[in-house]
Image (cartoon, rainbow, N blue to C red):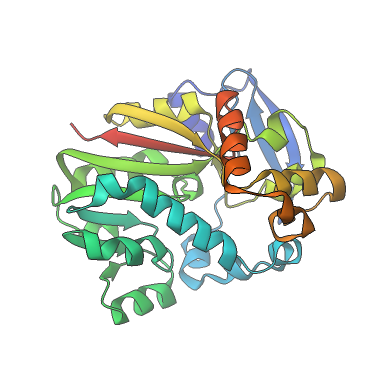
Length: 292
């Protein structure tokens, strides 16, 4: 199924309720981006960059991103630490699979505390690097035995997939009954998009590889559709107030690395994240669901 057909099957869009949200992405001219007026889901239809893009991994060196934010080492470190701390209680002592694990930042932190860890990744050099470092990594989820792991995590991967329901069903089949699947995705209600209407951010954040930007309700419906239970969803903010101020004042990303970062403190970030979560306008959604 196409992304449109997938979302239509979930009653999240229709040809009558969708409107053109943008007529391009940051990397592909003329690639139409849709938004559903009822569900709020933002999506791209009938486009997929192809597995070869992810096998080679050259997209990670996208100059259009680096010109705005620099290399993503700072963000990667922050994300990995946050994910480890917030999900430690779910993975400690468990058999864990990270689907779309990248260079394995989360697995490297979690490994000492888990019964076993395993990565699934397409990028060849990441697979080779993890295996060389003693962290088993494969290129296909089908190579894992059914009902053999306790927890599957997947951070900012599902939105890249042309067949997300099929993949979620595959992930579910690998988890034991009573085990968990944890999914992190970008949020269609990001404050800069939904409230501030920052066009520079809109033109930057819409990317051909992000096929779906979910709302809280659409993510829940997607997970429940494949049979997951006890779905809990929370809003998480990855980027701080300084980043938002930089977008509004300069029309560019990277405020968290600029002089504006001097404004930041742990208490300010916590308060800002809480405020954005209260109005459902964080930049990220995290869902935790049980496999029946």
